[in-house]
Length: 333
Image 1 (cartoon, helix red, strand yellow):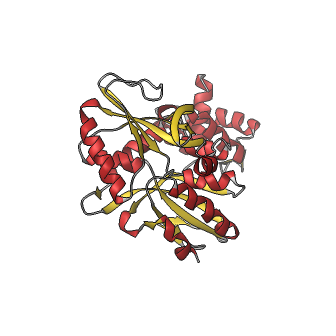
Image 2 (cartoon, rainbow, N blue to C red):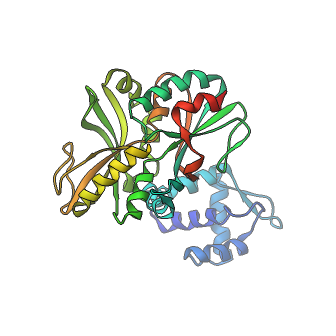
Image 3 (tube, rainbow, N blue to C red):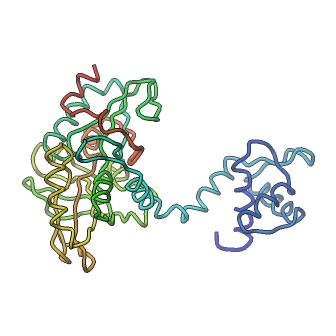
């Protein structure tokens, strides 16, 4: 929506978003002032006649006002998709900053992904999840579990489904930040594994240009082959490509060893100063870092016909309440 007329219409439709009651031209004129648009009530009513005709609003009568229709809500959502670009990158930065995890005490909150699976598929799903973790294709070894009609953190689990929480790779950002190492998250991608070794990227989605988490997209697009990578050593897994200051490489390698020791391993590779890693160039003065995607074990389920619903970077979660993946069966049954 580029024209002034279209921008005014979208502003008017936005005025309906925070109210459940019918509203009229005078109220709308006042509301859209906060969007930087000044229209008289009379002009607003002119635009409302257009939105009625387009099916975006419904006139309930002169004394009652108008309400927005489902088509109107969809129009607002689509029109402002450009405003959502970069939301993933912003969320990564915000969660990294908010994370309060102590590496020495192994306490505090980490970033958790939440996935739901139908209860009837649970026993079958656990086989694929366990294999992916065993082959170190997940973010460390810890998970959380929630039963139907309960809460996992603040997430309500639907009837007939269970929830599995996996450590999100953004947790690495938070740990590095607390250690004084800034992490610059560039993109999520599909990494080809051949004979158990990372070879090349086949797909990438820049965080700064996306409204959705890349690994969620790859999973639902049936683009991963985590199960094959785990079972045969050859496949495509979800990873994140990040950069750190080149001067921080020695400290980053120390942190990598510490994280592996406590069961939060997930850093696949740390590159050399200013040098490309797996053919991906890095900025001068920085080094590349490739981190395993936390949702990979869930991707293995989806690849085998088990429907999942995934929410990457869903919440901050107390680390001490997590448990090793090999205890999942005990918690589930």
